[in-house]
Structure formats: structure tokens, C-alpha cells
Length: 142
Image 1 (cartoon, helix red, strand yellow):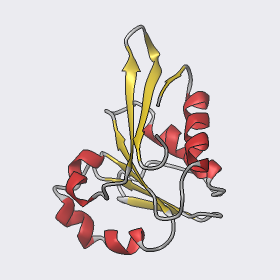
Image 2 (cartoon, rainbow, N blue to C red; image 1 turned 60 degrees about the horizontal axis):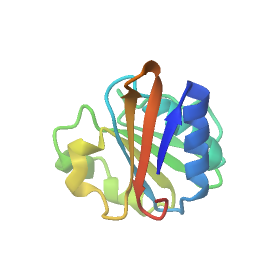
Image 3 (cartoon, rainbow, N blue to C red; image 1 turned 180 degrees about the vertical axis):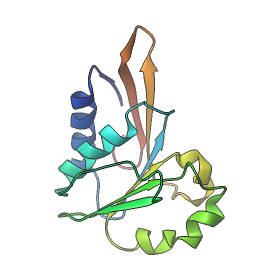
């Protein structure tokens, strides 16, 4: 499914809609460069999962946890060298905790992601710098 987002608020709304299609244990694998809206999308995802609290990028902490009806574990793999580093921080434990794992820079750890992961690709729209093309594939959300 492909969406055009004209604003940060629309990007959040698309994330919130995706949350309704996810089950505990789902993995959302983000692809997209810096400034493409991954954290905005995650804010909407968190809202849709019933999570409270301010959603921020986990760039320096590797993972942020948000409690809600379905917990959200928000990972940033930018600083990791391989999936081995992901396993070192307890990836398998997060997968078994009954929450949703949202993984920024997922290409860094592609071999550790489950086959049924939902891939969300965010890219700049060719006609307008502030718009985003958001493509959602895989899992049960496609």
C-alpha cells in the first residue's frame, strides 16, 4: 500500500492506522534516510497502540520502550554494526514480550528480522520536498 503524506501530522496518522492492523509480536522495519519521518510515523504508531508518553528517536539509547495497551519497543540500528549487536542487547527478549518492535535503519540488521515483518519505506516526494511517499509492505498489513 502506498500513501502520500503532505505533513508530519499526516505521517503520524498513517502510522496510527497501521497500528490497528498489528498484533502483539509484530515487527515494523523502517527504511528511509535521515529526516524522512520515521520518528513521526512512530509517534502515530505509538498513539494507535495506546502508548502514552513523548516519543523520541532512540539514536543514542538504541531502544526506547513505551507502555500501552500493546507496548512499543522503538529501536534505532544506525549505530549498530551487525545483527549480532542486536542480539547482544536482547532482541529475542523484546520479540517475546508481546509488544510491537519498530526498527529504524532495519537494513543494518535485516538478517535478524522475522520473515513476516512489515516494511515501511519513507522517501521524499519528487515534486515537493516536504511531502513523503510511504510504502507499507509485508506482514498482515499489506
